[in-house]
Length: 187
Image 1 (cartoon, rainbow, N blue to C red):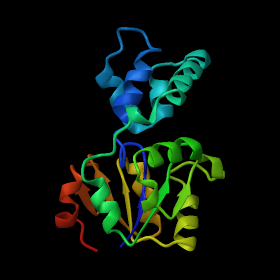
Image 2: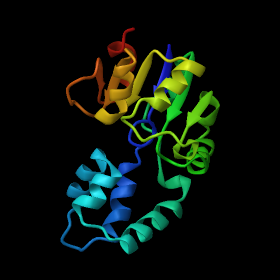
Image 3: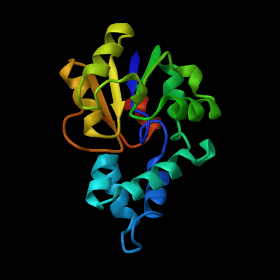
């Protein structure tokens, strides 16, 4: 099986870290659970929802950039799924440098044959251009993501999809944990 992966919230449990960092630039009255909920939609949604100004956004992005790779942990059992795939590719809005730093730190870079990042100039998801590119150059059978916008492009290409820790309608498969992968995902 060839798998196209999202990164944040799918391979790595990054949203708790991003939530704590965004909390640092927001008024104390804003609750972490509300920040987390908005970030899970998208970063731009969260910044708009909390009316983050340019200075606050810059400070938040600096905090994210200064975060050590140790701050992010891969989800349990995701490495077993990566190791079992015939091929893995990533499409993320993260920078290539940041992506590679985290993957290498945790020894997961060896599982991926291709990466599309924000540095590659493709439109943001859910535009399918990056998925089309990855499919034409590497092929994939399944797209795994934690948000609906991660599966929309794959659906447009007629691919199977899996939502991780998200029960929004539209996916072919749903997982709460990666130790469920081999029982639930059938192609």
